[in-house]
Image (cartoon, helix red, strand yellow):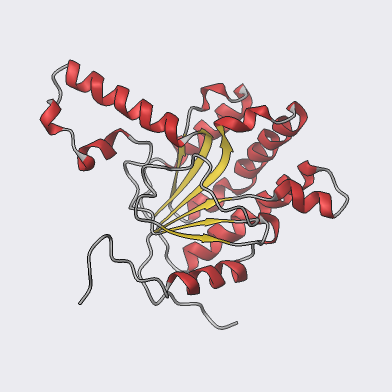
Length: 240
């Protein structure tokens, strides 16, 4: 197979992994089966991005709104998440890939918290790649949290109000150690960001594909990357 090479620099890709339940229902399977297959797809995408040297990946795994889903589906989601880290943690170690979490994981089941925290601890000193999984995450909630953290620092005299700007505000976000997001891909055909990384996506390129996440293979990702390479990223400026 011909090696895929990026023609335009890309450091960070974010994914809204949508369509798992619908994919399963079309196959007369329970929605949870779609989530199980989705986890296998994640590791394939991670391997491919490492191969083409994309440094960071962010995945919308569980939103603050997902608690409204049926309890049995939520329980299975966390079960599959636990299995994912148990099965693939050594691979992340081999890649020297740092695992971080965006979101409030204190609300997750205790077993899930322990497994996720262990993965974070084991990989905390790695810097070659970053795997950011968004769990119990909401973009609006993150911005409010960041404002509160900044306010506490101002109140304690660590910074002044004048010190706070768009550059320093980033330090209060979950993603403060990550590069800017170059590309956000949402699968399944929906065309919205659903409260995902709202601050970080300010100048990100968006691609919405009709392919559901369980069918989103590295080959499908290559198609998105080729589309990304046609984009003219001006960041508000005008090119002569």
